[in-house]
Image (cartoon, rainbow, N blue to C red):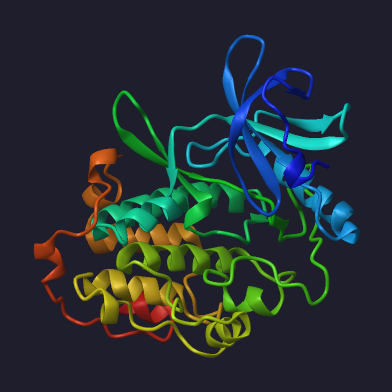
Length: 336
């Protein structure tokens, strides 16, 4: 596996057919390059970085190869596909190849804008629901849903924005019939997995024993962030303090920081953020349907254009909506 200070130089090859052009970015797990093949087609190629602790090599390698296997089984407009993957024979470096997308992830957009017009935020999350539903249908739970893993691809001709769920490095088969080529969990005992600001309470306790309701929580927290400018427990600075807050109390009321959000939407967000997974919204499809009902399907399913990616207007921000009464369960939400 490559080291961070040993990134592939331009004009080098990986997988024998992909010529590296430049580094696009990277994180704790890998480096992403822009590359082209012999026909001139351009791709994003992700390679695995060697961890600082050598004992983690095989686990990280297995996770990376699982990401490739997961993505290769799913074909959906709202999921980033893997078009090729393997292990480069020259450097023994695992790699996966994805289409080169134009746009940015939701986290970058929120860093620039703070929050989004509520109807636009809902429409983007409904798209993410569609992608995650396809993932869940394959018996897979993502376990790292967050704004930076929701890529907003923009069509240069139409300006239309399509949400793509990406980064399946922590994905796990959660039922008795996992998708072909996808192994079971690799979670080490006592090891935290996920992103603390977005992780569900049950995943904070044990990442091994989660199902699709954990992804529902994480997606709802991403919507909370998009609606008000920060995830619910952004004020907590320590890791242990954050885990304690997530596992011991419900999220602070969304309308305390974003009073312009309509109460119907706020109630849905909080019902999808309930700490008890038995009380929480059970699936992303139900979450999408509830949001359709709250804002109207013409708004929630409308095409989103790049020009619509903007924060609420000053007039909208100055409107204080009726305060939503929290519910104790998703069933209670459906009854009222």
